[in-house]
Amino acid sequence: MRIEDKIKITDSIGPKGYVIMKKSDGTVLFEKFNLIVTEGRKYLRELFIINAFPSDFPYNEEYTDYKLKKFGFGSSGVATQLSDDSLDSIIGDKIEITKEILDASNGQMYIILRGSLTPDEGTVIRELGLFLSDTGDNNKLFSRVVFDPISIEAGETYDIDYYIYF
Image 1 (cartoon, rainbow, N blue to C red):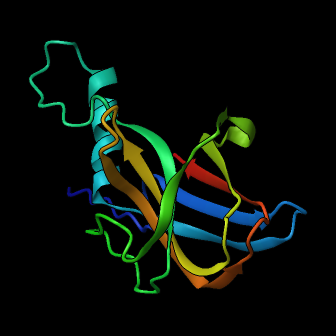
Image 2 (cartoon, helix red, strand yellow):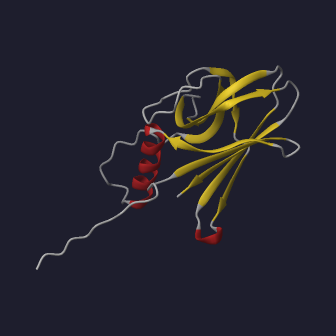
C-alpha cells in the first residue's frame, strides 16, 4: 500500500506585510500587500533561531544589533523583487517608527508598526520601504511596496500603519 499526501496551496505561506497610508484626517491614500524581501526574511529566520534554540547552537548572527526602525519613501515605480536591497529612488531622510503594537485578536498574530511624515516640501511618491537599522545607523531593506503615484503636500501629516502578519 502506498500513501501519498498532496497539498494544494491557495494562499502564500510565511510572513506577509500590509501597508496603509493615510492623511491625518483619515483619508486613505493607499493600502496594499507588500513583499518582505530576502534581507527581511533572513532577519526573521535569525530571530527564530536565536530565540528557539540553545545559546550554544552554532550560528553566525548577522542581524543581532538590527531592529525594525525606519520607513523610507521613493519615486520609482519599478516592481518589487525578492532580491531588492534598497528603494530604487529614495526621497529625503528615512523616518522613525514611533510605535509598535502586538496583537493576537481573532487568532491572528500580527505586529503593527506606525510612523508619521510631515514633509517640508511637496513631492510625488511611488514606493515605500521598511528598514532594519543597527546602532551605527546602517540600514537593510526589510520590505518594499510600489503603488500608484501619490502627491504629498508640504506641511500635511501622513500616517503609516505597517502590518506584519505571521
